[in-house]
Length: 366
Image 1 (cartoon, helix red, strand yellow):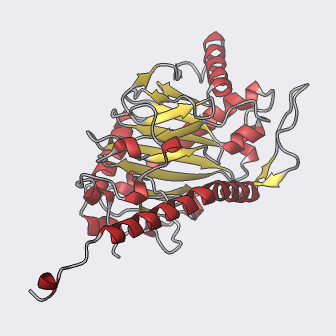
Image 2: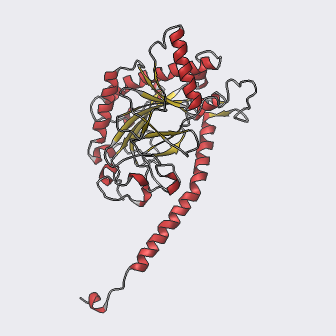
Image 3: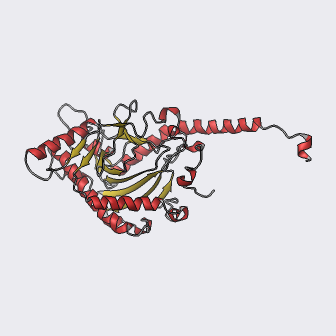
């Protein structure tokens, strides 16, 4: 069956079964029920010595310890560059279906366009389309997997990626200093830091109360920076999913969240943000994420352990192995749900077949 984009499915009145989440995974809080609990931190003065820098660093460290997620403004990234990257992203998802599918990522390609991304082995799919590719290390860039439409994508992405990498490293320096390490310690632990750009498009959803744009998870890497539009839908939890907080969009801000790698390097002191994305039936939503991750061979192990704290890892492992274990655990958790979903579908099909009335003699020979 030919791939169909969600833009086409968004015109339907009901969701296909493959997008319907089990009740325990469905949204508890709406996309636009905003909270101001997530800190918003101005970075004005971060590059200067003195009391102002110390105050900013204190706020950043507290946000990482408390939530693992916060927003930064006055970050120094060119606002025109952000606007241009956002415009290009919108224009890409507005392209005809055939144009987007030219960059179809199926078949193991490292980058491109994906419809309804989800973990392999899961029965339920996310309600989102993405275009993704690696921007760092520069030697790893495969421009054949970057969109060639709209015009200007490559040059804008290159500039955008560089500024976001610089911002990420600046924030990691703050964490290194908070751990009483050299300011480059966390960045060096990544060996040769890579950066993956993921542009998310969440079309209007006919039944948003039954679906998720992106299921609950923590990012595996070091640190993630995300620019979102003003619609809303990003949510975070710090109590295991019992309560959710919708991050209020702030014009020009970047959402910062720590990944598993950063969490382990700090020996659990800094939280890996537990988050998800919900959708709605009124507006489509766009976000642009850059994931700063360690090299596959980078060693994952606490860089410093505070007195009295227990180690969160039993032994040093490579990031590649850490990622493999995370995926295996996720698949193990997903397996029972997948089997239950398949059984439900089979029962519904059988019920439909049973309810079909046999044709009368007259209908057969009409």
